[in-house]
Image (cartoon, rainbow, N blue to C red):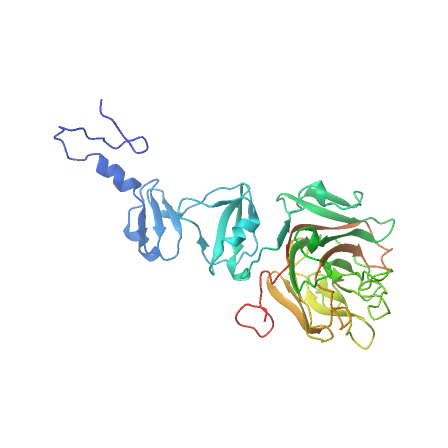
Amino acid sequence: MVDRTPNHGLHLYEPGETDWSHSPDMETIEKRLVVRALDADRSAYEPHPGATFVAIDTFAVYDGDGSRWVPATREYETVRTTDGRTGHLAVDDAFRVPEYDDRAEMIGTIDGGHAYLGLVDGSLEVIDATSVSEIGDQYVHVAFDDEAHVGSRPDRNEIVPDPSGLGDVLRVAFPEEGDVYGASWSYHVGDYFEVDYDDPVEDAHARFEVYFPGAFEYYDLHPHGGGKLPGFADRRNPEAEDSAGWGSRDPRDDDRDGWGGRLNFYKPGHSWGDETSGVAGLGTQLSHYASSADGYSEAVGGGPLGEAPGRWVQVDQYVEMNDPGEANGLLVVWVDGELLYDKDDVMYRDEDATFLGAHEFWFNVYYGGSHGAQRDDEWLAFRDLELWWDRGPQLSLSGDSDGSVS
């Protein structure tokens, strides 16, 4: 009995054999050997059933069906992308997708301007390296996939199936009856890393995805008609009984230091929204030491929160602290990877509050404020919060061409 190779049944020749015709082995090799050539030249090669063609210039992979080369398809349980506009996918080779323990490990492998594909905990993820250019060690990823991330209001914060049908997400509810608050907790840099809370943290970047249902009811009788979303802050002074940076708490009052940069959403009819498509507006309620003539707090922005309701929108916020007493701090916000607004004259701290920094990401979500009583039961959903307590993934500023925050 002739021995054969296990995968392709090729003849295993024994010493003394005289038939070296290699038939039908050559036919098997012809059909199974991977073809590597330019994409435009693939028509010159026979698309044997089950054969594989790898384009050496575009990195595309094709399967032969006997008459033509068709794009190869591989099924995975989950596909999640940070940006759908990718160039080509860089993998270890044409047949193996690299595996990572978590998304932070995957991001740490990026060293070029391509998109990277990998399996993270059994799910396929794609990360666009053009939006991730500088990753440090102080990184936190909150998946919102278990009850540990629902805060202290289980009646309003719960983990539910993704509205778009992918995994689990955090749902924040605003019941018709009751107060306006949906969520309020914080992620402090000192909870994760060895950082002295009295020392300033100079840079911080946050990224999360938010989902507005298409039928969301805004409060149309108010000029803003929206509410609060998460944002960076530093709301404490060790010497004060009441910190500043939120509500009516002016940081310029005696013994009251702090700043706040929570994001605001506005009704579609606001100048920053899009009434035609029903898209909410997005801005920042910035509380700092050097504000407009109206006081310490100002609305900074803004523009539409995505293209249409009923879809996930990626929001990025970056803060860079000012030199104490100088109005040269930076606040930048992007939506779906595109710059929405930036402000380069922020005074997060004065000459006496040198200890202030970007210590806290305040996950504060509520409907309206004092005007939030008239509404139906409403909700928002959140997924994939990422925090970098350093420069993080740098996206472009207005007027920049190198894709970096300067």
